[in-house]
Amino acid sequence: MNFSLTSLKQYGSLIKFSHTLFALPFAGIAYVLAFLKTHERSVTDWVVLSILILISMVLARSAAMGFNRIVDRDIDAKNQRTADREIPAGKISLRSAILFVVLSSLGFFVVSWWINPLAFVLSFPTLLILLGYSLAKRFTWLCHYILGFSIGLAPLATWVAIREEIVLEPVLWTIGLAFNLAGFDILYALQDREFDSKEGLHSIPAKFGRKNSLIIAMISHVLCILFLFFAGIVSGLGPVFLIFVSITAFYLFQEHKIARAAGEVFFPPKFYQIHSYISLILFGGLLIDRIFFLVIL
Image 1 (tube, rainbow, N blue to C red):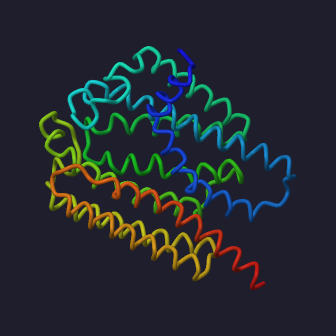
Image 2 (image 1 turned 90 degrees about the horizontal axis):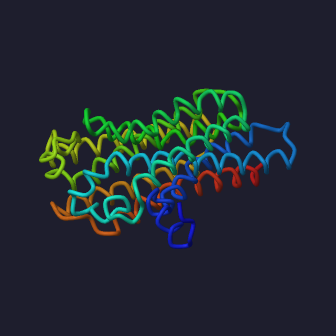
Image 3 (image 1 turned 135 degrees about the vertical axis):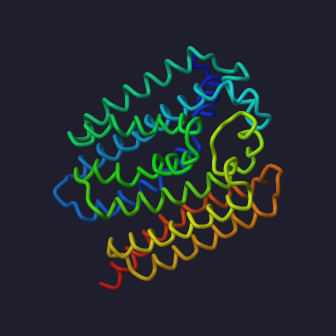
């Protein structure tokens, strides 16, 4: 593997490193809530744990995205939208990509072991889920929800890293975010509906058509908002955060508006930009709500 600056950029593109940054606010929600409930750690312990959580997120997502690019390389080569991806375009060799995934996976296990025993035990099924979603499109149209759940695990995984427990609070955040991401992925898959049908790949747009897919995506996002409201209430968050959840609902509506207007053509950049705001809105709402709560007290 050649670790030149150009090579690093290629690997960053391979795993969509920018999407890892996008997922950080989701983990940040659980981090803040768990932090407020945990008082026995020193500043040094918090710094070390924070670094380990960040590294584990990067490694897990790197393994998942790298594996996705490996198993989808032949499909990507046939699709005009994805033909320029690193492996089908020859920018990264298959052997290098496999080595990258293996090293990322091993690194994830090691870092999880350093975090705590429960995190280590759960690192194996977690990585299995993260890798498994790449194969889901080959046998089930529920692949969007598998993807949503795999990425939505960020709050629950962060909670386990800090609190070493599985309770209702982070589970609700995970479910809410899973529906958010699943709805987004259904809309995203509308762009590949004809290609998926032709190649025998399973997706909601390929199985149910454009009109029904838009309805299913809308239902998913309504469930997302409901679970986020419920998660906020269970977490003891106040009306300030619930206002930000309402803002999130507005942006999700804008996503659907763009998807409906785009028809059968590729979605404009604004579609992806709007979705990138959602995690920041929720995380910002959480911080403002807690600051507001502390000021009132």
